[in-house]
Image (cartoon, rainbow, N blue to C red; front, side, top):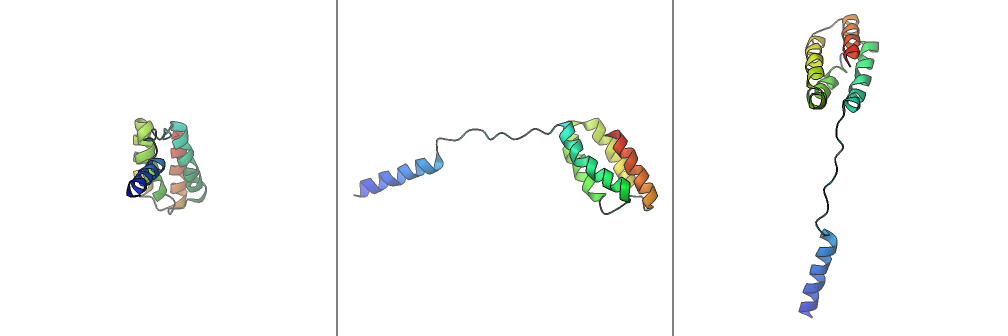
Length: 103
């Protein structure tokens, strides 16, 4: 009886664990997919001049865009650093519009 219980336990583990599984495919980031993340944020800033939204851009530019287009990331990051210093909504809108044109 003890042998049968041990065999059943091992069989259960094999069924639950499986046969090693394959590699999980992770989608590759493409320049267009990253731009589709950044563009709506910049459009919102360009239309409202809202400083609250500016913070969302940094991770998209530094992490996502840098992984697929380093030159564009560097240019937008320089603009981002200027953007965070601005306080006038008209200047914020203009800078965001300029950043949009670089996408």
